[in-house]
Amino acid sequence: MLTLLKLLKDGRFHSGQALGAALGVTRSAVWKQLQHLEADLGLSIHKVRGRGYQLAAPLTLLDPAEVGRFSPACEWPVLVFDSIDSTNAEALRAIERNQIAPFLVLAERQTAGRGRRGRKWASPFAENVYFSLVLRIEGGMRQLEGLSLVVGLAVMQTLRELGISGAGLKWPNDVLVGQKKIAGILLELVGDPADVCHVVLGVGINVNMQMTDEVDQQWTSMRLESGKAFDRNHLVATLGIMLQKYLARHQSEGFSTIQAEWEQNHLWQGRAVSLIAGVNQIDGEVLGIDSQGALRLKVGGVEKVFSGGELSLRLRNDS
Image (cartoon, rainbow, N blue to C red; front, side, top):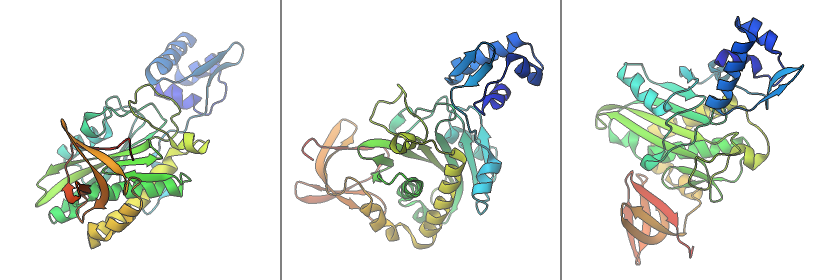
């Protein structure tokens, strides 16, 4: 089925006879595969008598060679999957298989993509970037301090470099444009964080997606913000270069040297917010973050610090 898709990806018309000859199957078999492409991958295919079949829009698929061409300095092995449950899940399986880090897992689509707090991450075929970078961490907890915030900075700067000037940060792991989510970060850790461990830096970016009914919050995409389609191979390469820069700085200098830059780009700095922790709600004003990436809130005139994976931050109506 995906071999057929690669024949159609140029967006031009192809006759059923030519497609069948290229695949070594009958025109009837081509027709059945086309129906599967539409049903399984959500693609729109035009069918015109006398001309053949055409994708509604040309398709650029992820390609390790293309990623490497855009970023020759990034030497991470790149694994690309047509369809997978989630890139983070595959990264964790690869760690269990003793694959040597660093390495990068990408997918054209995820069937069980997930975000923080168990949320589903919409993952349509060949529209967005689903990106999981695996690192081996040695030297203890200091190298993990604020790491998800560092990744968020790298994602935000990548989006800005590619023309999404309104991209900004929301504590702890979201990148927004205005009030709409454009990217999210999910870190997962395996091993002993006090000694040697592996960390999966999971990043989801809405790139060319223009509609979906799978998202339960305000969202946007690079295409919706700019009015143009993006080459996802170029985006992956640019993000890889940006991550290398920020990770090297984090490793050598620690998170405290990146703290001020993060705060300068926090869209909710100084805003009145509600922090949701399970069934509890804490109202306060965002003061910033501390040297380990925890949230600093003014609550009842007193500064308090909060950290943890199950916390959710929301703007208050009076903000």
